[in-house]
Length: 200
Length: 417
Image 1: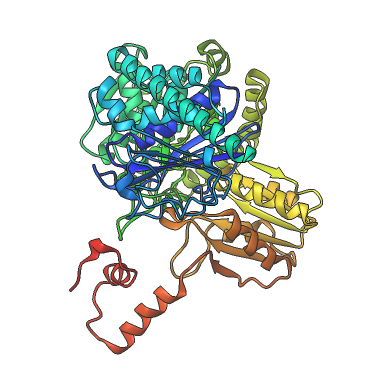
Image 2: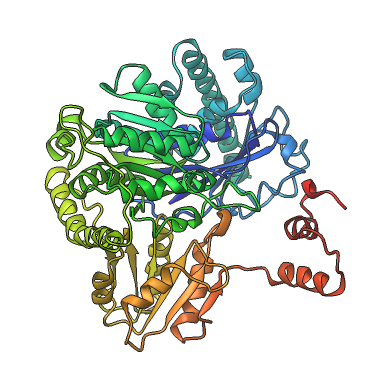
């Protein structure tokens, strides 16, 4: 089972992001379960949503306390909420930001993580560019599709089509594609760097 | 056809496939998405003939359903929590009059303190109101139970409450196998009422009954629920023949045959318990799970038979009768009366507190050596409780309890006095 926890704020499409991830996993033939951290929804308040994926039926209903991946839709949460709580050392971190992990003050925290498991993507900027609204959930989903191959970009594009229609769907699909490409480039660079280290 | 969707959406579609003719509801979390979905289908003309009636309260919602059901229309409504309490008088009337209404209860706690999260206190408050109560473990089962519920209700001329965990199921996206209209039509024939308000053949429904016959009318209500003990498994068998799935029935068992310890629960927590039991089995513990699908009627014989070999029973329930303890466990005790097995009551998951695998694992380990108290509150924070009790001892004007607790644990919104 692979477990993802998404942190963001009310209005950023955190819950919809988890739901679309589950649709994309379903498209890939997997069992998937997405659910929000049920609270009183308010714009701007910290929100958490979860997605589990597995090759067999998912029966577990507890919140995800030891995720395999964390997606952070809003980096201002880093110093407000324990976003990394329970994250496994071989887990993935994907943050919506234009800064590096060092610039966010996370260098020490992430030093034991695998470099190709640490990703950033300017999801808000991509959403503004393609959709015209600062809703980073879909670009982050596109970026996630580039990580580890759990869900495919095609499945993400399909999930977007199930949730949205017309220009909004098209814009979101373009944003997801661009985020996917950005992460593929980052992954490639991380790979080259680790190869250089191997040779050194 | 398989689809990945929200539990509320799955239920709305299942209700629509059952061809209701009148839907009336008042929105309340976490039921809202179900009736919103149905409202959209009626408005778009995807569900016809069907009238969606907006009402001003839950009391009106069920009252309209009583009227439309008495007039011969297949009628549906949905509610939760305070909404169910607000319609309480009509809840008893619907069953007393023998009207086969189907109602979803998206289970949620009851205030005060106000709490929108999941537990079973709402439907448990109506357990003796004469409705059948079926509890869903998954969204697939919630979907399936609604289709079965119309058939059971109309066969018996009694209302059925389909209970599904609020948020945990209603707001969860998971895979469901959505039947076709053709399949549902084959399973569920059009509504043939036993009683109907028909101007061409007038009857009175709702007569006053005095001491000369009230006991008999009430006994007949009980007799009908006893008939349901046979009908519910029969409908589940018919359902399997049509749809190829095990859904519904009175109880379901998981690894109980050789179990020394049997855990009994209702609803979505069964999944977490099954995963925990798999872990304990791997460690060599003989433990199994019994899920109660039909809480009313209560399947005394089925539970008695399924637990005959067990040394102990642990009932994990998301409800609690203040002043005595368990609700489900009291019913379970009546099922295993005259047997030496202890029946432990574990109150868990109140007001949305997560029931974790870890907590259930530790709890069951304790139960194996009979070290559990007869009444346990899972994950209860004694520090919080004791602080309040201490404060009340030393200070007469100790203030409101809920606000005091929130201040103690540092919840910002509580402010200070």
